[in-house]
Image (tube, rainbow, N blue to C red; front, side):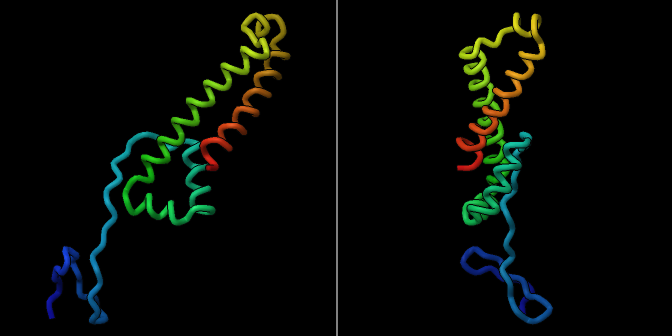
Length: 125
């Protein structure tokens, strides 16, 4: 028996039990951008609620790219929403210098609200 053979562009390898198994390899994922917090949350979400999409991304070698894109989109959206909300609520640098505790409370509230919006719009979709 041959140790290896190729059929239909798939290489088969003879195992110890005498059965030929396909020699399958995942494509290289050469993405170097960081996945970050939102990418990690997206990965967990895909694993739990969309396993087919998750496996498709792994098998196509694009999971890390997808997660890095999600992370960047989430941060861009957060920056935009925070800027919008601070303008709407009148949170300024002048408030920061005159009453830093009020400014801090307002910014924490905006950050928390923004985080929830981003999670629902981008990460958990």
